[in-house]
Image (cartoon, rainbow, N blue to C red; front, side):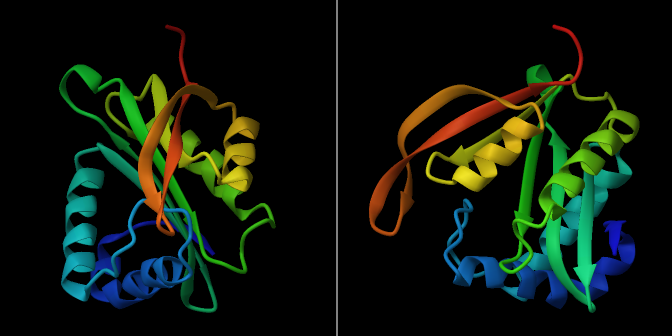
Length: 172
């Protein structure tokens, strides 16, 4: 099942905590490496719901057999960057490579154009340069690499570069 994040998810924060911590435990190439507490997850859900109500964020959740297998979202930036949205997606191990990430990404981008205020003109993301499956997905979605930031991430005891990628949703 694929659905929007809702107010009811706050009482199910444990499911979201289990999801993110499973991805952290496998040491996936995401930007957090510290396990998330239930209190932190509840706060994230509350803050995210506030942003959704203000039309500053959009989130989709993928569930299978009552556990979360994917989560994607776009958050509008503020002030002079309010024309941009930060895009992110995480798919649980065992559900990657089957088209779920592409489907979720396309759906959240469609929703962002309709529901975020103002609609973003540019989507931005950061990705480990060693995360080839993600980079291939982002290219397929129309993201272009615009920068390489050297040694900006730590992964398994080494410094790793990251790419910043953009997707233009409307003309410059």
